[in-house]
Image (cartoon, rainbow, N blue to C red):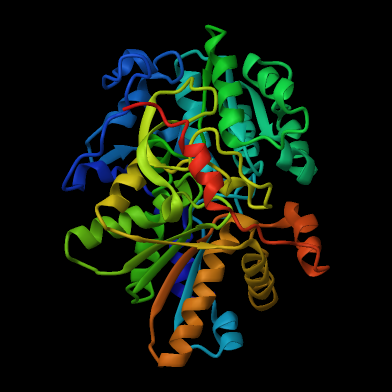
Length: 452
């Protein structure tokens, strides 16, 4: 093992603070609005859903937020995570580029999601909350929250998007092993779900629908709160342990990134990797290109509009200024379930509008091809979500091969694909299809945007 790697995998290297990028932005992001009054919401408006500490973090302008000791104690189960030089992939591609990947698949639930699930469960437990409700797309977030709730004695109830519930049975099994109750969404146990089923009994579901169900269930009980695995500011802030570790690890290798690539659905993995580097870029210490990669079937950055919209389908959440395809949008059931969200993090949307990073969209066949190629070279099978970033990394590395440019490329493999082998089987057998999203479908969904 490289000496720098050995040293930096010591638990003393786990970041003691999360980084809040809001402290360093030249322009503050637009505030969430109350859906009734259209006025900026206050802490009291969020109190039925979130504990006080998370509400404070959501609106904080402090650059450094301390990680509680109880959270650090759980982080030690898998953090710090390794930064790996992908030398075998470089050789297979014949590229002069140097490729590094931050591997988050060694967490208890197999992805980066426990980085925020653990503090969310902790803060709720500290406030006396007895049950957390949530939604999940691919199941990574649901299994992470189920694990985190088990650490702090909090019950967990999950609404899993029907398409993923059917495609990924082992992810729902893992949630149940951790003690969670899991529903296919839309479900008959909530008013929001029942309404969708009445209109379309075969609905594949969406994250927007599942959010509506989880929020409805949380609002109906005094001892229950809601937890979200992406999109909101406090979630993105918790994920910056990824980038903070990577920043130190790259420096130990004597490297500075020229390009940072991350997959983006709601934004937590992409933000977690990129925000600490963006802080350094804003300070003039480095100047990498930063690039988000999203699915062509749900292209919020590249084909959505920047507007106030609901975070859920039923309109139960505050209005968020974000890149959106419209809260009624139901994505095609591609296998990257964690990237099937109609909107994008408001914080990332704001930063994108400021021109601080790029975005591209890719079809799933290219991404699964890249995931298989990565696995054959590096031995690590990426989940469908990070395979989007891997596809762009490979494309960039091949461009470097043509130009002879020796770029340093950094990405995050934010989860393993061990529960996604059915999807890889579809790709390998030639049965997987890309989905060409018609513009008319986007335009039809955007007609449901709330009046400004």
